[in-house]
Image (tube, rainbow, N blue to C red):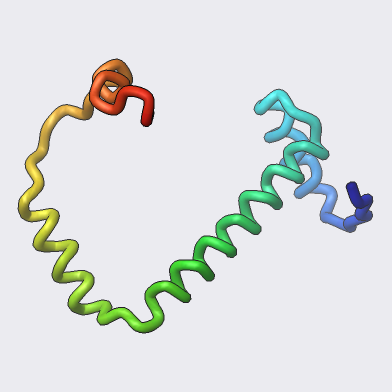
Amino acid sequence: MATLSVRIRNDLKEKAADLAKRQGVSLNNFINATLAATVAQAETLAFFEDRLKDVDLVALRQRVEDFMKRTEPGQEPSIEELHKAMGDRF
C-alpha cells in the first residue's frame, strides 16, 4: 500500500473527520473509500460513454419511454419476496 501526503484546507479536513466519525471509521478509511468511489464513478462514466458512442440516442430514449409506458405503478416487493422469486440467484 502506498503512502501519500496531501495538503488540504483545515476546514475540509475537519469536515471529513466529522463525516468519518459519524460513519464510525478512521479518517484514512473515509478518504480511501471516498477516493475509491470517485474513481469508480469516473470509470463507470467512461465505460458508458464508450458503449454509447455509436448509439442513436434519440432512438434509445424513445425505446426507454416506450418501455416506461408499459410499466404500472405498484408496491415494491419485500426482501422476502425477492428471495422467493430469485432463489439462489439473489
